[in-house]
Amino acid sequence: MTTTLSSPAAVTSSSHREDGEGSLQVHLDPSMKIEEGALVIAVYGKGGIGKSTTSSNLSAAFSKLGKRVLQIGCDPKHDSTFTLTKKMVPTVIDILETVNFHTEELRPEDFMFEGYNGVMCVESGGPPAGTGCGGYVTGQTVKLLKEHHLLEETDVVIFDVLGDVVCGGFAAPLQHANYCLIVTANDFDSIFAMNRIIAAIQAKAKNYKVRLGGVVANRSKDTDQIDKFNERVGMKTMAHFPDLDAIRRSRLKKCTIFEMEATPEVEAVQQEYLNLAQRMLDNVVPLEAESLKDREIFDLLGFD
Image (cartoon, rainbow, N blue to C red; front, side, top):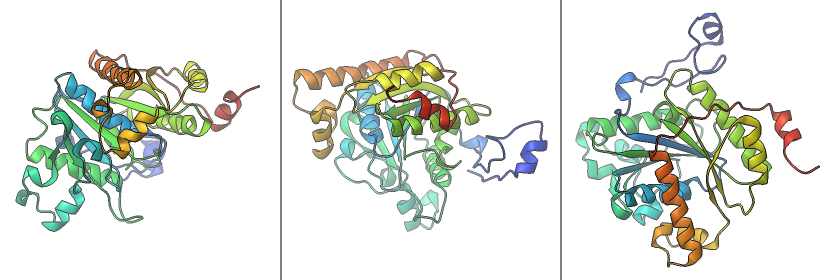
């Protein structure tokens, strides 16, 4: 991945607008695009909202539907895939450092690990706090996977991305994705974060193929606030997962929901993940949502 910085003046004067007004962005090297044919999904949402649990269970669901799945964790704490692999796997950045970033010295088994039901797992990791760019790390991961021809026979790629979108680096997976799924709870803070993510998609969609795929309502009995926001901005809920203790316990057991003891509630959640996976495979209609101003969200949500 190459880093190209566009000054605000250059962005304003150019007939070709960059990603966002006056933004400093990490731009995608065209040679690093993931091959056409794979369904690439980026999972975003407020920190702690359950993105990794959602991503891992969704990966498992795709594998249950017979798809070859690769999950890429994009968080320095590298815990995206541990319910699939049952361990904290080494990160791409840690492995690259051991060979002084000479990628030709690495083997696929050094950085890619097989998890539940054949799901392949990679943890990008990240630079030390305050010292680097998450976009660079994502780019190095995709570059490494392409150099080893590990994306050529993959049906579904899921990027599990940390926290809110605050810079071009955290938005870098959107440069590869077909769709973005936003995980949110039925509360103000996570919907506020979702609104910012929608704004990021609006910016990236100017120059990349990524589009909004929809909302995953998580850890929520009700969805009235999510429904109110969706109706206002043009979003759609693709799946709804209640605040079920079995989901929490599956994380503690280091396993997916598909490995939990079958009960009517667990089976209902499993089926919802399978339904979500099938919906994403059935040519999702891209959503043309419009983000709100901060004050508009404040006025919209809550009770009169």
